[in-house]
Every structure is written in structure tokens, then in C-alpha cells.
Length: 337
Image (tube, rainbow, N blue to C red; front, side):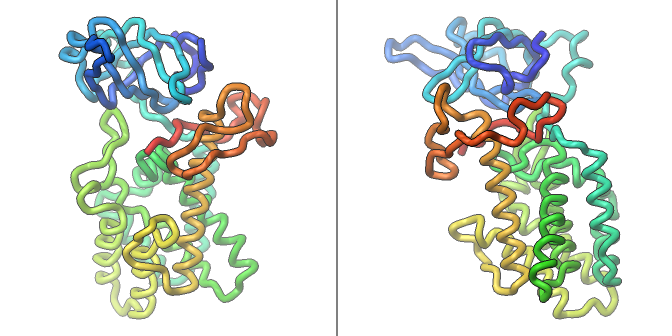
């Protein structure tokens, strides 16, 4: 059994382990011969995988969301790693306990991040904002479940506790930037950070692999967050109208610098800062993984990346290069649009 997840293996190495089937396709060579193309995932992330034998039979027998055991070899194809499947089978009943959770997860110190999150939470002293945070995280919506969620599906922080990483990073940046720009309302910014993603438990499912729910796909996390926050603000007696409007504006304009057409554009100082901070953390988190996984063998450059619409340079010595795995920062699956 491979001691590492498949994403951590080098080209030519053998993988033997459990994966969840995220997607399956029956494809055909130019000769008309069929082959099976899968997207499979384990705790390290996801890979494209191909089986060249018994393609039609496997396509019928294997189901999306099913856990399988695979023996294969990592290879390089069109500038990306993929898994050449040599053997594949459904798991046996006696193997179920050993492969219950194949979702990728943060490799950072979760307990340390939770302590930081609580410290930031405790720094908010405005009674209205404190009351709002209390109400948002009640009614079967515990903080523990919220921070365990991913923050994205394919782009950024797309793993368990990704949301916790994202929130703590944004609040750390808030503290730093407020030291230089004294006119910023740091408590308002931190409150917006904490609650801007409260839609993600509804937006994403974690049933075998991370995917959008129907509500998440149709409504999106911004609407889902606005809905809950608006509802809870209305339960607080005498909540200041200006504070309500400003907080809702920050949440609704959070993607001002993330999307070409964000809908609502940031029009206050806090809203501008919030959207810029979010955009930076999303980009850097994605770029770290791309630089780790998509660098061409023997080159200082990655393949052309569709997310950034450019090549990325990886010739500089990375901070954790040569460190033990236990010391590495979080690195998960590459971003693919």
C-alpha cells in the first residue's frame, strides 16, 4: 500500500491505494477502441486516471462516488500527471473501515488555527456584532462544522478545514493592515470575514468528494450568506441601520476583485479592503499548489495555467523545499478549471 497519497508520488512511481470515483467517461481512440477515463480522488487530491483494458465492462460496473482500490503508475500526459490504471476493483466489506474518509484535508496545525480563530473572535467587542455572531452560529450551525468545510471546490482551499485556513489568514491580514490604515473598522472587517462564508455548509456536499449541492449551484455562497446574516440581524433589537447596511454591503461585494462581473462592486473602504484580501488569499493558495504540482520536469516553469492565463515561475527556492512532510505547508490538488 502506498504510504503517500497519489498526488505526492513522482512520475514513474507505483500507486496502490483507495480512491473515490469523482467522474467517469467512456472514450475512444482514433482506432475506435474504447478506454475508460476516470477522475479519482484520495486524501492528497485528485487525478485523471485511465484504464485501457475492459473499458466497457468497467464503465458499467463502476459508479460515481464509489470507493475502489487501484494499482497503477503515475505518468506524464499533456503536461499533467495522471494515473495509468493497471488493476482496479470495488472495495470489500472488510476494507470499509480503512477508507472511510478520502477527502483531502489541510496539513496545517488545526488546533493552532482553531486557537487563532477563537482569539480573533474574542477580539470583537461591539455588542451588536457579538450578538450577531452568537445568533449566526446557533440553531444547529456549530462553528466546528463551519470551519471544517472547504472554502472552494476547485480553485482555492478546496479541502477539509480549508475554510478555517482562509478565515484565519484573512483575520491575520486584517490586524496587519489596520495598523497602517487607522481609519479602517477592524471589528467590522473581522466580523465580515467570519460570516462571509456561512453559506458553504449549504453550498458544498462532502459525500465521498467535495461537490456543489443543488442549492449551492443554483444560489451561490454569497446569497446563502446574505440570507442568514440578514435574518439574524433582524432578530437583534435596535441593530443600527448603518451598521447593518455596511455589513451586508461588504458581504454582497466580496467578489469585487475576484470576478470579472461581481454583481455588486465594493464601494466602501472596508468593502474594498475585504475583497482585495480575499482575492489575494485565493490566488496565493491556488498558486502554491500549481507551482508544486504543475512545474514541468527539469524546468523552472509550470505548464500554461488556465486559471491565471499565464506560465508561473518556480525557479526560486521555496520556503519549505527540502523540509520533512510534517513541516510542509498545506499542499493539495492542482487547480483545473
